Image (cartoon, rainbow, N blue to C red; front, top):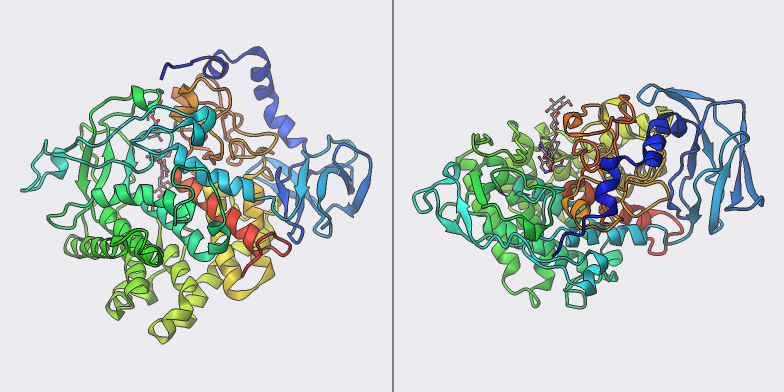
Amino acid sequence: MTPRRSLKSLLPLACLALPCAAWAAAPQAASATIKVNQLGFLPGAAKFAVVPDGKAASFTVVQAGTDTVVKTGTLAPGKAAPEAGDKVRLADFTGLATPGRYQVRVAGLPDSPPFDIGPAVFQPVNAAAIKAFYFNRNSTALDEKHAGAYARAAGHPDTRVLVHASAASPARPAGTVISSPKGWYDAGDYNKYIVNSGITTYTLLAAFEDFPELFKGQDLNIPESGNALPDLLDEALWNLEWMLTMQDPADGGVYHKLTNLKFDGMVMPDQAREPRYVVQKTTAAALNFAAVMATASRVFAPYEQHVPGLSAKMLAAAKAAWQWARANPGVYYQQPKDVATGEYGDKDVSDEFGWAAAELFITTKDPAYYGAMKAPALKATVPSWAQVDGLAWMSLARHRKTLGSAVDQALVANRIDTLSASLARGWKASAYGITMQPADYVWGSSAVALNQAMVLAHGYRLTGKREYLDAAQAGLDYALGRNALGTSFVTGFGTKLPLHPHHRPSEADGIAAPVPGWLVGGPQPGQQDKNDCPVAYLSALPAKSWLDHGCSYASNEVAINWNAPLVYVTAAIQALTPGGASTQH
Ligand code: G3I
Ligand code: 9MR
């Protein structure tokens, strides 16, 4: 496809007078605005806006663009938010449940961005967040019928991938050619990493296991739409089929990643033609693979007629990977000298062992796996690619009724409830009314907020404690605008939103708007990319250290493991909140 490098790629670099001035003024300007979830709320949801501390003690909610007041309220006392360098007050308008389009108004401030209250406000963003995976499909052209303006030629067929020296084995010496097509590009780059694919694909499958009705009726307009599988499962299968090819049939080991030696330039997939390699088998890759294949095996089992043999094949693959990991429990990823792409390195795989054992146990009911999980010693923490113990507990909680006395039911409940309670405490104490704490502003902070919300949704399902649902809502509110920058972190959604994600197709396609439905990494103070960026970050403060520029891989990249909890949480809030179009428990 001819590169249509035009307006968008020039905009950030040239730093046209107007956007530059706007950026320079942005931290101050952001402090003086009302922050709110820019999409809105289901009628029965908790509803909060964040207002800068000032003279005003009250707020109103008006019908958008009018002076018609539908609610008045008192602002909560001001609280300092050191991570954002400001002091703010909360406006609580939970009582407003009438569908409509509104703005929050406070004397002396610009009105908040408009938002909707309605029974289906999160369905479009949920669909777009899944569709984003389709847009990142490896080894295929995206046709206009399904991709619209984002149609593109195929790239990275990955049918002739070289075995890297680090991955050589007797049957597959270095330089052996294998075929490993499909899968999703990991992020803004064009490589594929098993560890990150693990948590991502699991999270999508977990969304399906928890909210099947919502997904069974969903039409994503992807090539498989209309077949016997729900579209979410079709999309997940695109990646699962790739993952299966990453297992060495000779021994069950799993390659850590499929990658170029160096990152591609900011080009479209069909312009990227560097050789591709599978690199080193690792324990972490084997365990992530085992956990996901065990999960997928049970999710696809009811579709045996449509995908004959798939469920059994996945379970066999999971067991073989598990066996390999047991025999090779400490093979950590070591980046070879000639490889410079993402590492996803992790030297503590006790959580991966626990998670894989839990999924194998749930699927097979074989108590030996429960024993191998070492449940009493396994912690529950907010999930991330490097820390997956929480996934084990969420899966056990989800399936607890079918597991009976084979599991320590009290322990399962306790792990989820304790973690949820701790997140809810942080939510109550925080000035912005969010679960994010100062230390949570790490690379991919937006996904921290959403993974916290995912835990809380499980807490709510398990205990029915309303505050867990409200705290989960706050995670979604954060991602959609109730944050220190007053910005939605999802491309294509909201009124103030990311326009220049570090995403090769979005940068190189010549289309002004980035590919929609992607969650960008979000603020974090590391600024590891600042030498690659021609303009400065907005601020050094953890909650404001963000740069909406294509250069900013440390704060503005997109990634599959960040989008997956966006899918989960939009589904959860849509399905669990009273008054939602597809409420279920
Ligand atoms: O482990 C330390 C921890 O001990 C310490 O307390 C903490 C303080 O910030 O840092 C932790 O290490 C961080 C590590 O992630 C583990 O979470 C590093 O600072 C941080 O730089 C590192 O960021 C990772 C980044 O790659 C750079 O390696 C992100 O988590 C990860 O999401 C990101 O992934 C990249 C892929 O490599 C390539 N594809 C794009 C993708 C998204 O940007
Ligand atoms: O594009 C790369 C991105 O996907 C990674 O997350 C990031 C960190 O590993 O690296 C990016 O590549 C940059 C490289 O690290 C340094 N030179 C500039 C590259 C981006 O243009």
